[in-house]
View 1 (cartoon, rainbow, N blue to C red):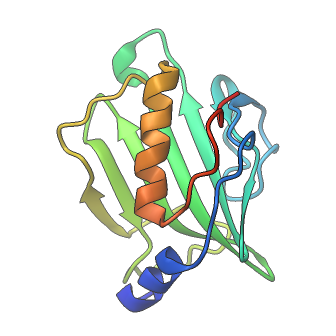
View 2 (cartoon, rainbow, N blue to C red):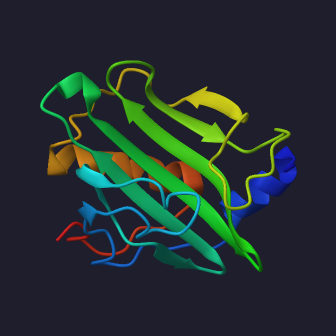
Length: 161
């Protein structure tokens, strides 16, 4: 279980998105490491596991749908450990409910090693912000909010190309 100080030290650690690392591609099951290895199919696109430096990694996921309210954007921040990835934070955008919110593995009981952020605190982020997950401009806005929540420095322009 992470306490608030430990989570804050993870946020403050040096991390950076490099240009070109943020290309969303079709996602097939078992392409990403646990806990994301079960996600995939024709409606999912994702980045590869993005190395951020100092044993941190991230993944951005996009779920498409013909129905705008069923579209999703998700961003995960992980720290690498000897036995796998520990989920520190998940930023979600669900137009159908909750808008933009973050789940943190702070002061929650479940162990998040190779698991999703479960049982953690949910915090609303930018409550008035509405995004269209299909729009590259809104995907970039989501990335900026994710980077701010996680303390990740952004690389040069053109990250989705």
